[in-house]
Length: 437
Picture 1 (cartoon, rainbow, N blue to C red):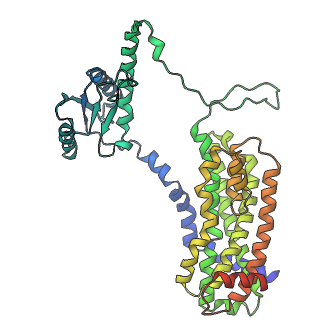
Picture 2 (cartoon, one colour):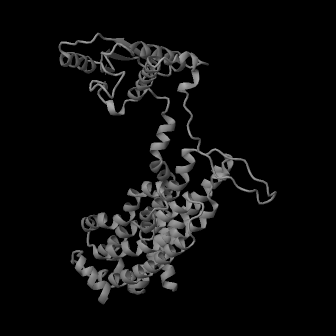
Picture 3 (cartoon, rainbow, N blue to C red):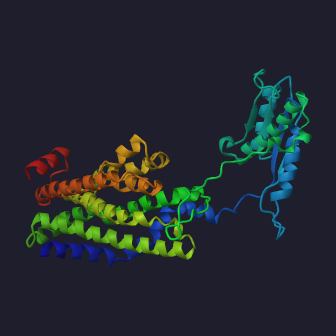
């Protein structure tokens, strides 16, 4: 055991003493949260040039409503109330008479104007818009370079449909002016569950929740675990390959058994992961508490987070160390990197479906697969208040059993492959060495 700890200490210190580890510890969260950070930093960096939108109203019913809505929008959001600075583009509605003889030629002409940057977009409103169930020409066409992603496409639907509702009511003899609240829309407010205060026994008031609260906690911790695996387990593949190719492993094996050598490297990677986990968790809790958002910290999940991180690093570290022992050069290690990364990447692809339906059969089954348990079960435990107790414990038991199997099989592969020079990594060899040793 002393030799195992010596290898683990050497592996740990060789990693944490490097500038790369310190820099990675700081930069990794920025890289993984870069898109969210960029959205916050650059939310006010918008093109404030006026957007000219041409409107071809073949019905003759709604273009005036679009103009009025654009004027109201421009008065409300284009200029900052305090500084008077222009912070949003103004919408300029250009009314274009419909070419009823050759509508295709008119569409081409307007499209060319968009290409010449004279227009931002043009809207074509069908003639039968008032009664769409009776007329096949009832449609609204929004033409732009990136029409599907254009925010003004959804904006322009509001004044058009609002005016159509007014006209339909007028046809039935109802004056919309006498019923101002007819078009009022009330959304369903997201509210948290009501609880009883354990100290006073009083029923607490309802608390409004948000989309950010529902997403950040369940997704942040699995993403953090992904970073920790990248810190502690994944580098073992290249590290073992380099020591084998440089004959360092042969020197170490003069004083330690192959299994002790591999286990020491895995424990060293585990220490690296737990060091980073401690820094991130303590730093995150401190920052969130100082921001006055301590109620959003899932304290009940933190012990599970550390246990999952420990078992995941051991399990995957043994696999990567075994893979590395089969490689003779960086090109072979690169060829094995994709299959080696699949157990880490697959949970990333199914995190959102699991978060949306954490109690579904699919989410339950996938979270009980040992390679997927750490992050998927963590998502379900964070998203649900009453996950059945047997599920996380069964997942933990499966992880522990699979981690032992991975260490045992990885040790047998490592023992044979670490001293075999020139033999390319093959699945058949790996299976044979795992079984026969």
